[in-house]
Structure formats: C-alpha cells, structure tokens
Image (cartoon, rainbow, N blue to C red; front, side, top):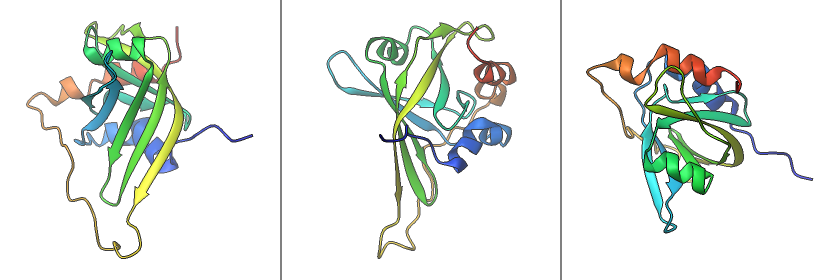
Length: 158
C-alpha cells in the first residue's frame, strides 16, 4: 500500500508561516477545473495558503469567485510553487468550504494533498534557474498579509 502524498519539508516550512513572516511576494498559481472541464487559474499569496501538516493545506479564496465555485463542484485543484531551483506541483482535493470569520469576502477550504511532483534541473541543466516567477507588489501589504486571516487558516475546523 502506498503512503499518502506529502509536500516537501521546505515547502511545509514556507506554507506554515515562514513565507508569510517574510512577506514573501511570490504569487502561487492555484488551478481549479471549471464546469466545461477547462483549467482556471487564480493567484494566491503566502497570506492565503497555510500548511497544517505535510498532508493538509488550507486556502482562502474570494467568496463567490469562480475558484470557490470550482472547489465546491469539482474539488480537484493544483497549487504551484515556482522557486529559483525547482518547481513544485501539489495536486489536492478540497474539503467542505466555510465562510471566513476574519474576512467576510473569503471562503476557507481545507485541502488534502493527493500527489506531489518536484521538478529540478536535470543532467546538463545544472546552471539553470528561474530568475523570477509571478510576484505580488501591493500598495497595501496588510491586505495581502492579514494577520487575522493567516491565524484563522491555522485553526482547526470549528
């Protein structure tokens, strides 16, 4: 019997608060599937994703958005992390969403890790690295990095 998928330890550290504490500006593409079967991407910040463990993540998405509707309908999604020396794809299955108590414009969804793929430089690509990926810059960083929302993502279901 195979072990359940787990995110790499360094990604768990970033998603458990290190990325949030550093106000890491990296945008995290979060892909869901629309009713017609097409991928639909949203960009999340480190203030909207939290690891509860290496097997469970939690995300906050806009209430009433296509992303929220797709998580309710299809439950399948994929989160990307594009680092300098690797790209990590995390396929997840969403649990039942709930309204955020700290931000009424958000819905919170628990995510179970289903599959993880780590892409690193292969033979002959040793010097290759990503210089930058999608980056958030904000005039109001507290909007992207809300202490109350990030704390709520760390709490167990009520």
